Length: 543
Image (spheres, one colour):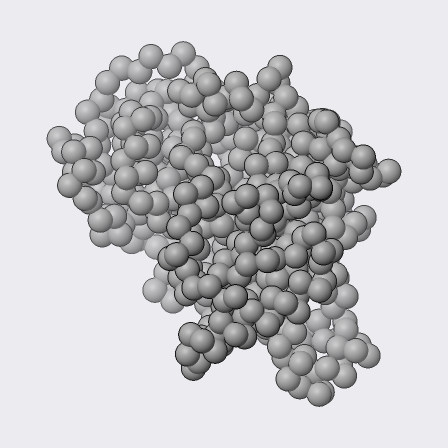
């Protein structure tokens, strides 16, 4: 099926097209100072046009790179589309990124502007001052009837003529993934528009939907699958003001969303809390046993999900037990798969035809192949299609390592079943090959352990392909009122118990404990780069 917006040249044209069709519909909302602020489609377009002119008056030339950083907000969206409307390239930056990485991106892309939502949130180090030096500051106020306080601080850098020859690039998305230095993923307007067209086909929601946004817009999962996809359908996106359970449930009850894109970590937290409630209450235990759907209604009411039609999980693998639990209580999860280099979607489960453990069917315009499969059909996943990026910014050597003849090496290991549903086994670079030649996937072991109420987080690895190590962060309920020796004893015994659920060659042999949080990506995957030169003496040995 051909979608007419596939012929559009620019993602801003997508917004204008929808605005003409549904000018009076609410498109964005958020709580500011406990007041619900919303913007209609025609108001959003007007705000974008105004800010575009103001940027243009600053002397910004087409094809320039403009960096943007801030929390999800109406103003972020206005700013992003203004960059696109000016025919410039957006460079989204994680506001939580460290100063060194932020400085690298601003210099590497020769950004002409750095737009931030609140200058007070950006602690300028002496190194970063070198970038901001000689810049002119100007405040652009975005006023509308519902809120006259929206504003963004713009840091203006000296304008230089760019040598870039193309204006079809929508954004340069810097991602360190889980293992290394930031790489700039170049995504064109056509990349993003093709992905949106495929989402339309495989997730054909028809009515006016309200999407609840908790994932960062600087990540392409939220940008494409939530913001751009919903705008293409004339839906509304609400930005949650804070990502904690209290705020989340309060705003969900006020908004009553019908669509909720999430990452597995959020679902795991809900699952653990639900299982704890079931275990501690005979009434709830009986209700769950005899009427799981009724138990699910209680969870829907408690979370503000009574109107939910679609929960979309992506960004990381979803635990099979968690997936089955939500399905049992009447909250089926639609799991998808992708990566930044694919705009991001490669596959997703069709509505009503989900398969447990699978990341679904490959989208229409994309094709995949399983390279060098083993005797079980498991091999490295390669993908090709209009959604695949053109390369990493100013990094031909790394591009050539992952992109050959249009085929993207995803670095993920997986297989296809007889119905062409895709399953992800693990990451190629993380796989442990023991002396018997058997592949051990750390993610599979982590999935088994993470559901324990005693474990908050875990990373599994091996330094020698013989011993399988685990660094475990205990749950706060364990560490709150116990000494370290007691904590080590509890966690080690729990590890021994959980090991029994694994095949003997996959069992953890050495357990270490940390009381610190692991550094994570914006989709809540642990950054494993610290494992390269890990000093295990920094951690508490539990055995």
